[in-house]
Amino acid sequence: MNNRPMNTRTLSCALIAVLALGGCGGAADQAAPDPAGATEAAPGAITAAQIARLGIRTEPARDAGPLPLGTVPAQVTLPPEARVAVTAPFAGALVRLFVIEGQEVSRGQALAVVRAAEPVQYGANLARARAELTLAQTRAARLGQLAREGVVAGARADEASAQLHQVQATIAENRRLLALGGASPDGTMTLRAPIAGRLAHVAVETGGPVGGMTAPFVIENTARYRLDLQLPERIARAVRPGMAVDVQVPQTAGGAPVIVSGKVLSVGASIDPATRSVLAKASIGGAPGLVSGQNLMAVIKGADVARGGVSVPSVAVTQSQGQAFVFVRAGNRFVRRKVAVVAEAGGRSVIGEGLTPGEPVAVSGVAELKSLLAE
Image (tube, rainbow, N blue to C red; front, side):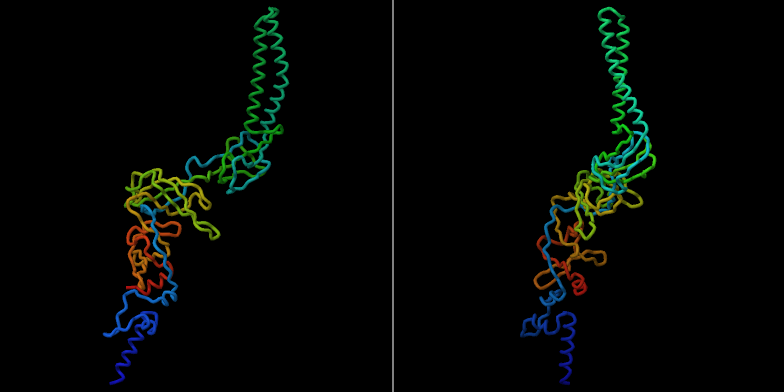
């Protein structure tokens, strides 16, 4: 009979050690003696030793400014004016190629050298016209003087003047044609990039033909891009042209993501029956790692300037049955708090409801807290 109370007390101590993760001795250190008996620990209370052992670290929630409208899927595209074709003014053969497809080029950079027969003909015509110019000038001047003196008929002077103008026009035309292609006397001409950007298409090889009506090169201007946004029904009516848009562009080699900003250009007037979304278009700047056809998530800002949100590291947010939670520290306790995540960008989540700036939230050891405080 005397041994039964001791066994019950021992079993209770072992159960407290399992639930508190701190051992029977740790619980005894935390709880102060009570004349009426041991006090019950508050829900979620853990000791400093447990916090250190579980690797729990907290950060205060930050003020995120005006609350974003939401995060929506987006696909990167090029605006219609972003593609420029590079053509050869004369048909010929490509003798040297300096670039490859996908390469970044600067404005004025040499792309290829083409040799054509037409510039040689224009050069020959120019040389003959120059040779005739002096003779035509002399003849026109002489007949003009004789016509004024009444020695010859004025018609002959007019004919000589017309021939001079014809020679001058031939020289100007051949000069223009040669300058158009930048051709040298041997018929070679250099094709250069008219804009800076990325070579999206190279349709020629060294030794291959180059047609005057085909484009051997297509360059994409990578300074500006478009976004095709899929707006859910619940926010489509609130989106307006001019609203700010941010996208997070992942970087290679472990670099930090880059945030690229832009603005909404237009919002569609109908709902796609397949996706139940409204198509909107936005304009954004260029950035390393941003390519046409890429799928990203876009944060639409400017929805409600009167209401602010808070920002926490995305690792602080955990999901349970479709609901987002964070663990907020209050003294020696951690409380599981429901939150509404309205946007994610740059490794941080913007909370619309459930959290205020300055409240400390767990940013590590979240999985352990989730298991410890599971209901």
